[in-house]
Structure formats: C-alpha cells, structure tokens
Image: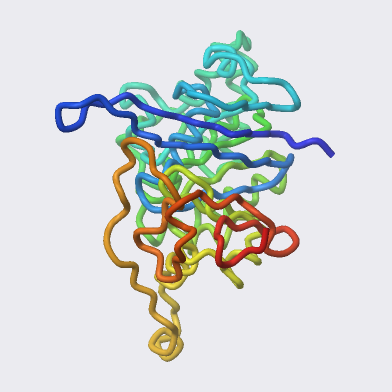
Length: 318
C-alpha cells in the first residue's frame, strides 16, 4: 500500500548572520520518512532538533530548501493550496494562542467550514456534532476561550482541526501546555477519535512517556537529522543509537527501586552549533562510543533489525 505521506531528503535551511559573518542554520538536513494512513508517527528529540521545522515544512508554513514532500502520491503545492484542501490540519502547542479570544467557540470551530463555503445551517449542525465528539457540552458553543479551562480549550482546537475531516493531523506538542492531570484525558480523547475517524497523525513531542502511549512508530531527531527510526516497541524496548538510549534513560520510572537500579546515561557537553557545515556524525562530540570514522563522515540510516533503522557506524553493519 502506498504511504499517505512521503518525505524525501527534506532540508530546511535559514540564512543567518553570526559573529559578523553570513552563515546557514541547517534546521532540517536530509530527513526522509513515510507515514501510512491511520498511523501515528512520533518525531522526538530535544528542543532545536528540527521537529517543528519538519512539521511546518510539510504544512507549507516553512519553505523547504530541498527535498520532496508527497501526499497521497502527489507533490504538495504551496501553503494556500494545502490549506484549501483541508486534508492536513494542525493541533498546536498552546490552545490559548491558537484561539481568537474575541470569537465564540462555535465561530472558531465553524471558521474553516465557512472558508470552505459550507452553508450556515450545515455549519451549526457540524459544530454541534464536533462538540459532542470532543466531549464538550452544547452550551460551550456560546462561550469565549477565556471562559474555558486549558483542557477545554484544547478540545476546541481539536474540534476545529477535525471540522473538515482531515486525513492527516499534525500535532505539535499538543499537551505540553496543559496540567499533568489533564494530559491523559486529552491523549485518550485523541486516540479514541483517531480509532473512530481513521486519520493519520504526525505527533511532535519531546515527552517520551507521552510518545510511548500514543505512537505506532517513532523517529528520533538530533541536530536536524534522523538518528533512529522504527516501531515504537523496538525503539523503546531496545534503543540502539546512543542518543536514543540517553533520551529513554532520562524518562522517570514510577517504581523507585527500579529507578535507582537503572543505568544512568549522562551525555557530556552541549549540542554543537547548527550553523554551517558539520563534517562527520552530528552526535559525535557527545557520543560515548565514538570511533575515528565518526569524525570523517556521516553515518547512513541503516537497518539494525526488521522495522528498525539506526544511523551509527558502531551499532550497524553496512
């Protein structure tokens, strides 16, 4: 079966001036992956690794410097064309910033329908249907965002994203701005709706405990590149790249005895500057298992085992 979304050698570079000289920030540098219909693919990594730039390039909100992005087998057009199609929608990180405080909930949810030319009577019916779908009472329609809790506002954002029945939902840190007590409610709502409606999801997050709960497959990014990709169970239960090992080791375990007994991985130093060319493996300056070859060339993303690929000279065999 052909993938719903196919990204090939995607690059997003930004021209900058640093230290009095012109340079280029390689926010995304040669990223490739596929997403199947109905699947949840999570992109994880530290802040600045290129997760959101990848998502925004797919949406057309960032200009791709190089590479191709195909949706349902067709190259994507400009941002306006992508928006008009309604096939891709975004659920952003901060629901307060995503909603116009002067618009009632009903108007916010109905806005994409109005832009599409849906008649008012059909818009009202669709708004009522969506409010019920996301678990909000009918009276919420007449309220303003400031009258709702953070969790309720995020439900409104999700309802608006689903108004035009998208095939792909791009979720950019969708629960990071919410209280911990509310996060599980929103995540469970999201998973239930995906099961019922069948949309695919590109889930951007730095929270691996959340990703483990929702993802079918995981892509791990570091400094604009993919260092590991595979089924969620393979990545979490048997991480292969040293960076992925460190990320997973940093996730707390609720059992205090197991937490004390687990192996601690502390990475030395900070990520190198994303400005300019970076010969060799981007993770090499912090890698505890580096070899001489790592400084000379960048490792390719190769199969470590079925459904699991890793970019590491030490952990894979060409």
